[in-house]
Amino acid sequence: MNSEQLKKAQSGAGFIAALDQSGGSTPKALKLYGVSEDAYSGDEQMFDLVHEMRTRIITSPAFDGDRIMGAILFEMTMDRQIEGRPTADYLWNVKNIVPFLKIDKGLNDEQDGAQTMKPMPGLDDLLDRAVANGVFGTKERSVIKLPGAGLDAVVAQQFEVGRQVLAKGLVPIIEPEVDIKSPKKAEAEEQLKAALLAGVNALSDDQKVMLKLTLPDTDNLYRELVDHPKVLRVVALSGGYARDEACEKLARNTGVIASFSRALTEGLTAQQSDEEFNATLDQAIASIAKASAN
Image (cartoon, rainbow, N blue to C red; front, top):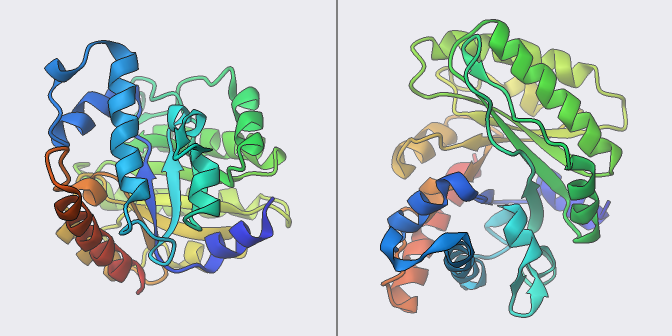
C-alpha cells in the first residue's frame, strides 16, 4: 500500500468525488449532463461519452488535490486512459488525488427491508487489477430501507467482502446506504451504528476500513465510528439530497467528509464552454469541500 496515499486518505483535506455511475445509472447521468439517449447507440458509445464527461471533470483545473482527497472510479474508467495515462495513475501522479474503485455488481432484490449486493464471482481478479493499477481502496454499496434482519445481513456481507479486499492490501469503503425516504430512517440508523461498531471491533489490529454512510437524522450519530482506531475515515453520501441540503447536513457532522456523486455534478452540461463548465464545477467543489472541513 502506498503510504503517501494512506496519509492523505486518513487526514487529507477535502472530500471524495464519486465518479462511479455504472451501466444501470449511466443513461441518467448522461441525460443530466445534457446528452440524450438518441445521441448514442449501444454500450460502447455510451461508455465513450461517459468517459469524455469524466475526463472533462478530472482534467478541469477546478478538480484539484487540495480540495479533493479521493475519487471513486467505475471499473471501465479504471481500464481507460486520461491524457495518455491510466486513470488511477493520472489521478494520483498528476492531481494528487487518491484513487478508489467501485467493485460491487449492483443490488439483489429487497429482502427483509434491505438489498444486499449481487454475487461478485470475479472479485479476486478485479482486486488484483486494481492493485496493478495503483488503486488505494474499493467501494461496495448495499441499501437499507428498514431496520431488522435485512440490515444485519447487509452489514455481515459488507464486512465479508471488506475482509477479501483487505487481504489484497486495499482499503474497503463499506457503504450500507440507508434510504433517505425510509419511514424508519432514525431507527435503522441506530441499529446500523451498533452493527458497524461490532463489525469494526472484530477487525484485527492492522486492519482499517472506511465507512460511507447516509447523512444521519441525528447529528454526530456516528461520532464513535469517526473516532474509532480501525476506521480510517467516515464519509457521507448525498443520497438524493440536493447539494445545498446535503452540505448543510454534512457541516453538522463533525469529522465526516463528503463523498458525493450527483451533488458534485449538479449543473454541469456537455453544452457548457470550458470556462462555464470549470466555473460551475469550481463552485460545487468549493461548497462541498467547505462543508467537509467541519
